[in-house]
Every structure is written in C-alpha cells, then in structure tokens.
Amino acid sequence: MSARGDAHLRAHRRLAIRPPRAFRLRREDPEATVIAGNQGIYTLSVSNAGPADATNVVVTDTLDPRLEIVQPLPAGCSAAGQVVTCTLASLAAGATRNWDITVRVRPDTPAGTVIPNVSGVTSDTSTPKESNNANIVVARRSDLAIGKTAGTLNAGAGGTYTLTVTNNGPSDDTGVTITDTLPAGVAFVSSTPSICAATGNVVTCQVGDLAANATTSVTLTVAVDTDVTGPVTNTANVTGDNPDPVPDNDSVTIETPITRVSDLTITKSVRAA
View (spheres, rainbow, N blue to C red):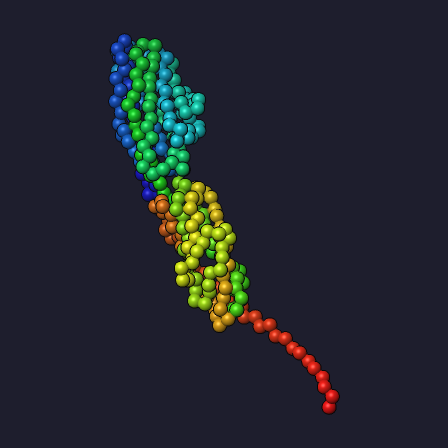
C-alpha cells in the first residue's frame, strides 16, 4: 500500500490444466486491504501444466456489487454486469497467461467489510474449476478540509461567519463535526442550517455524513458586545469518524476587524428671547 492509501490487490490464481483431469487451483495473496474509494488490482493467472495444449480457455471473475470495474479491461477480456470474462483461443502446455483487472471499492463501503471474489476457468480439454475466494478487506480514509470567512462584525450589533467543509475523499465520511471557538465579546445567536449549538464560546455543528468530493457550508450569526474593539481572532476545526491522511487542513484561523458604528442624532428647538 502506498503512503496515500492506495493498494494493489494481486489475487493470483494458478489454474493448472491437466486434460482430461479437473483443474487444480492455487492462489497467492488471498487477502489485501483497500481503502474505500480507491482502486485495487486482481491478477488472474492461468497456467497449463500439460501434457496437451488447451483450447477455448475461458476465465471468469465474478465481482461483488461493492466493486466497480475500471475500464479499459485487458485485451481479450470483457465485462457483463459484474462478471469479467477473459478468453484464449489456445494455451500451450507449460504456458501461463496473466490478466490484471482493476477495480474500485465504492466510497460508501463500511470499514471492516470483507469483499469476496470468485473466479473460474474452463476449456475444451478440462473439467471446469472454481477458485477459492480472494478477499478485499475495506478500510476508510477521508481528507476533510475546512475554510472560514467573515462578514462585517459591528460592535454593539453583530455579523456572520461562514464555515465550509470539503471531503476530499477517497472515502465517504460519517460523524463530521465542526467546532468553532468564538473570541471574547462575540456570542453565538443561530446557525443556517440549524445544526449548531454553543457551550460558552465554543460552537459545535453536527454535519453528520459527508460523501467523498462533497462540500457543505454553515453560516453562524453572532452578536458583538459594544466594547469590543478588535480585530478578533478565532479558530475552527473539523473532525470525522474516518482517519484523516492530511491533518494540516483540518483547522483554520482568521482575523476579523470590528466596525464601530455610532448612530448620532441631533435635535433643534427655538424659544423667544
């Protein structure tokens, strides 16, 4: 697996063709971990142990619905639904042929899911043989990123902050939560949508589920005390249930000036001297 979480699953199947006896099947790397939303590779390997050449060799690989076939397929292979079929007109005694089948694990697949895979081989000169499973074990990773902007903050009145969270994937995330610590003299009033609540000066927003490559925003309405002079600084953070491979973008700090507005009025009267 690479540092960014990609994994190449190579579930090798050695299908020994011994006409007229049944196939014998061996496989290597029977299990590998792939992150939901990322790709893996099944390597199908068919070998003819002889003594005769095999004709009309057909290898089928039945993929779980939680896997997406990544095109293009190797030469000689085609897909119908979740079944990949690879064919050879002939395979000489002692020869081996490999096909790499690239799949993508759906990004909403729960962590810990074990995805089985079954393949089989037939030819005109052998008995059909089905392999044992080669399993994908699913993990999840989500790169959450947060941004923040402020509208005008008026002393003695208020203003707004807008928080934006993006799930850069590769997996869907759950339990996404924003926390925003407001500066002294600034108080939470409400949020749009209404997913936030405050304890003291800490505002917590329950975003919940956020799909890979999706973005959501929440606007906070705040009140500003009359004696706040500014500028004021505050920090917002985002967390989720999945491990985050890029923690550096999980928080944002901004500085916002405070505008002081005075509503002056004048009255005038006249009286006789």
